[in-house]
Length: 249
Image (cartoon, rainbow, N blue to C red; front, side, top):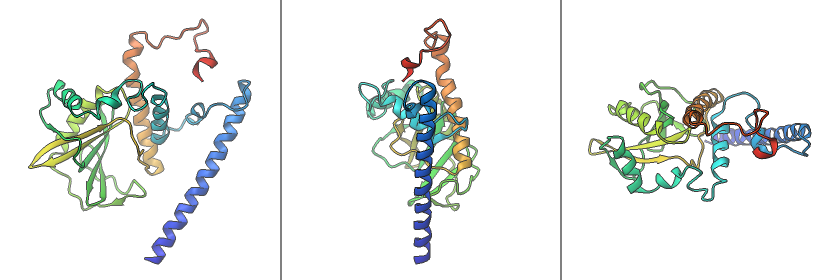
């Protein structure tokens, strides 16, 4: 046990050093890019997604900062944060899509579907503080989430397909590229335990899966923007075909 504790402490210290090194590199990039725009530093939001590598963490943090600028940060710019913390409005949303399962926002989820605007590449099964991650078809994806206790013995439930199908419909009509949809089994029936659009904790995956889910996030973001794009809401406003830099800071 002492050896394991020492190993974990060493890993935490190494992660801390890596974090500080990445923060220093980000600041350097902010200064380099800022100089190109006549500024001392470029805002952090404009730097973190410039390396071309998809990342779930970077994408989710970007959306958090965007919605934090709303007059009500909890609700966000689209108001979704307020809707899905209200049981009556959540149930109305569920019923509007022809679904009849129960809604209990106080229940603890035994399954969490990670959904990206109608796509569900990852389902998290929970049991006694342990987790197992599976694909939408029930395939065990292995120990892909450092920090959580991987439990390969958790059985894939018969209702997995049911919650995957429902989560795809629900997430497809929410104006966020990534949401977590929780489910709880009660007396053999599935209960919706919540649609989380304002994540307090962004899941930290292995580098491979952070990139995989980052690609899912980017595609979900693109699908989210398609409707306003077709309506002309994203048309550029300047003759040069781009926004002025000061408009986007």
